[in-house]
Image (spheres, rainbow, N blue to C red):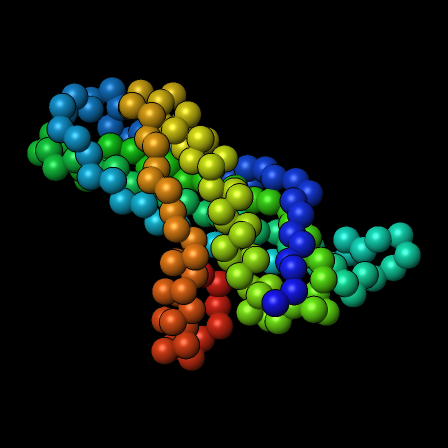
Length: 167
């Protein structure tokens, strides 16, 4: 198997939202139920060629790690039971080199395992800071095994016959 060479050229918050709908009335001492949803998207970026023109050995991609956290509390005094909702789309611009030597599957693994694995600690830190600023204890998300997630989604897509981005 050829050596993959993946480089990051930049990373940034594309979208960030925090909703605290029941503040300042949230007085429950109960620990909230935390529901985390993760979605990974990859978009090939056209127009990022080198000065000599199109480089067929390299492609550029924007990888988006979309994380939505919904915290709910079962309390009659809390409307809809929502403690908070935090959502971020954290992105990175990556290039993959050695394209002619890589299979389509190897490129997909780089995009849907390697990229998100790199981006996750940064998105996790943002979520911890935002929840803390919202008056809650910092929410430290558990690490995500993107390789297992990729394998499960690939299996599901083969069963369904689809070829979409991972949720």
